[in-house]
Length: 332
Image 1 (cartoon, rainbow, N blue to C red):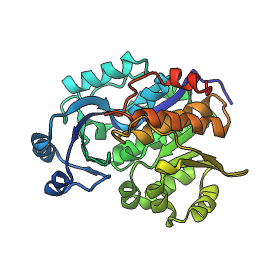
Image 2 (cartoon, one colour):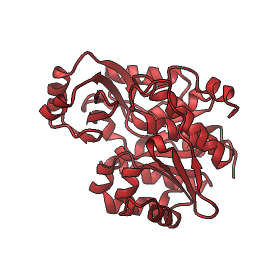
Image 3 (cartoon, rainbow, N blue to C red):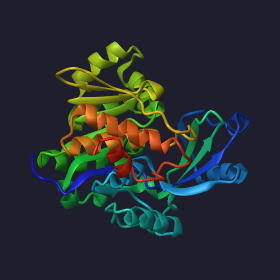
C-alpha cells in the first residue's frame, strides 16, 4: 500500500457543540429523543438554546472530534467539512488548526451560518442532540481536495453527514479517489435513526465503497436487522473487510472478514461524566492503530482508552494527552 503522510482524514459535519446539563423533563418539553440525534432548523435551535442551562461551547462534529483525538495520540490528521464565513466558523477552523489537524476548506459565503449541535446531558450521562447543520450541510464535491485524499491512509466518513444529498456526493467522490490510490475507507453509522431513514442508500454506499465499518450495537441492529450478536457477526463478515461494534460497558468486538473475532475490554473511566464523543474517540484510536499497522487487539485497545478519557469529562475533545495515556499503558 502506498505511503501516507496523514493517518486519518475525517469527512463530516463542521459544527460547534453547545453542551449543558439537563433533566429528563427538559427533553420531554422540547420533544428531544433521549440518547439520539435529530436535525432541526435555525428557529428551533434558537428556541432550545434559549431554554438550556449554562453551556460550554466547543468546536465539535463527530469526524472532527475523531481527528482531534488522532492528533492527541500523536498522529497526523486532516479534516473536510464546511463552515460559514462567520465568527463560529473562524473559531472552528482555528481550534482544529491549533491542535495540528490539517483543515483548509473554503468557507461558505451568502448561505446559512456555521452549524451547531445542542447537546443536553442528563444525570445518567446520556447525551441527547439536536443539530442545526447550517453551512455543514453544504459540503460538496468542490470541497474534496484530491491531493489531500491521496495523502491519507484511511478516509473516514461520518454517517450524520450522509443524509443530505450534496455532501453524499462528496462522500462518493472522496471514496473513489481513495480507492484509485489503494487507500482504505471507513464509515461510522453515527445514529440508528440515520440508518433507518437512509437504509438502502447506506447499504449501497457501504457495499460499493467502504472497507471498515464502525457502529454501536443499536446502529448495527438497524443495519443488519437483528440485535443478536452472532447474527450481526455473520452479516458483518459478508458486508465489510472489517467491522467494529462498540458495546458500551461490554467493550467492543472486531470482526474481520476472515479470521477470529477479537473481543476488546472496556477501559473504565475515572468518573463517568458525559458520553458525548465516546464513539468518535473510539474510532480515532482504532483507525489510528490500523493506519500505523497495529494488530486488531492493540488498535481496539487504543480505541477503548481514548473513549475512556473522553467520557470522564464534559465535551468530546481530549482534556489530557492521549499519547501520554497510551504510553503509560504500553500501547505506544
